[in-house]
Length: 417
Ligand code: SF4
Image (cartoon, rainbow, N blue to C red; front, top):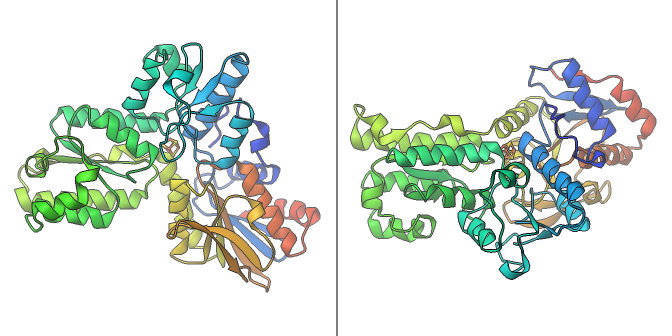
């Protein structure tokens, strides 16, 4: 998908090789989810149908660079990282943008150091109402139409979740948010939704099962509270507030897992209240899932069918959607989350991020020595194409292939059917 209206996205985020592959997909196999095959000598690189920048990310970057261009004389702040990619955030910081909060939510620049003359940008995953209020105290009118149009980069798919949460809250449903409690987007969704109703955050299938057990009277209040009290809104009473529920998600969660969480709660409500008034107790919210997350996850699953030997997934270590692509690939093959081509240390040694241990680790002998071999390369929704481009080139170089072989390969692109 090309987002040509976002013309302020810097050219240096693009990559010629990746662009050629995108153009090929526009000409051919547009509708097919089959990956693209790039032969480089006897090495096969497989690129999924969908990867990289989504609409919301392109839009946010476009807005940030537009603000820089239009206000060279004003101080520009971002509430926090605009998206979860270190290259993009560093780029903005080097151009003078300062972050008000760090990744842990710690305030870096005090209220008093932000004034009404400053430009403040809200990141793509949105922000909490509490942070908006603090900006208003500093003289930033976050409710003004001009602010919303030019400086609030919250993805429309995220605000759609908030709107749906508000609507369902007004109808009397408690909102269950499937998300990672500390993630900026989940914090923002929790903050917006709890203005209208009771809310509770569940992280995964296991927590959904615990919630279902409580609804069915199989878990006592004390145990339930010990597990969830930190993750529900003020005044939440599990005995009263779990009679009518609706599930929305942090848009970058595994779509399948959100559906599983909703399915578990749907079933619990059916068991508890019966079929007849099921709709009264459980609201259908399938329409809030983000298209880009779905596309990238489905394209990654299609990649598995081509049975690559290993997968490299390029993206920020803190990028939720990228880590879910790693989870999908890991079901079938060795899969490594890398930030950029600098992590391909040598043919024998790779630095990468372990999504379970949450730390950077090293793997030895990670590449197949013998050719032919198939290597899948993809990237998360916040990753500039240039980083993926550099990874493919460096990989080719490890096998002794250079520009000539890559150019020849780009002439022979095909779909893996
Ligand atoms: S992943 Fe979806 S919700 Fe998140 S920024 Fe991209 S388009 Fe928006």
